[in-house]
Amino acid sequence: MERSLETQVDQAVAAWLRWIPRWVPATHRGRVSPCRRCLGSPILSAAGIGSDVPHGVQHGLSTRIKKIVDHAVAEYTARNLPMLQAELDQQADRNRARSYRPAEDLEPEFEGLPLDPEPVPGSPFLFTISGLADEAAEELPPLPPLSEEAKAALRQEVALADEYANLVGREICGHLLRHRLEVQAAISQYVEPQIEAMLAELTEALDSPFDPDGHPGPRE
Picture 1 (cartoon, rainbow, N blue to C red):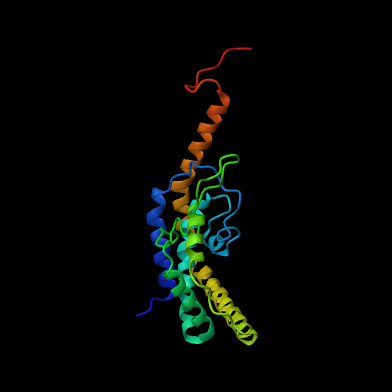
Picture 2: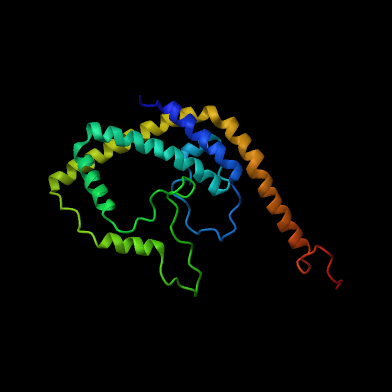
């Protein structure tokens, strides 16, 4: 029996709550480009996760919810949008034929994130994971071209799929409102103390920049 959207949201939040005690602040350099999945997300707003919450915490929930939306849209497409479904099937077959697929089977906390770190000026990479993946994709033959009529019909079906995704997203936001208190409680318990500890450590380092042991430095 197909699970209701409410049940799927409950299970996604429960999985996030089980994961959040394992979250630790990232120690690598932050990325310049924002995450399009999380920036300004109404899903995160409904769940009570503000923009000041670390991105890793946001991404762990937004990705789990995105899977619910994607699954609902996939079912709707299979039932009602034959041209789009055929296009997706061809693309899926093409993807499965690739020899290198590094973005597949990732944990929700890492899904959709860039495959490579930000480059350091003056220190170029010998190779990148995304570059290798692009090379594998280039080895495959292109998809067959579409007529102008087929392109117009496909655009219409894509618009319908987008409209349905928005409908599902709004319903999911309603279900997430019931979880705001437990989500915010988890952030208060597991995330905020780590951030406060980092800020305290930074403040201590700024107060005594010349002595890693915290002893006062020489007077002027």
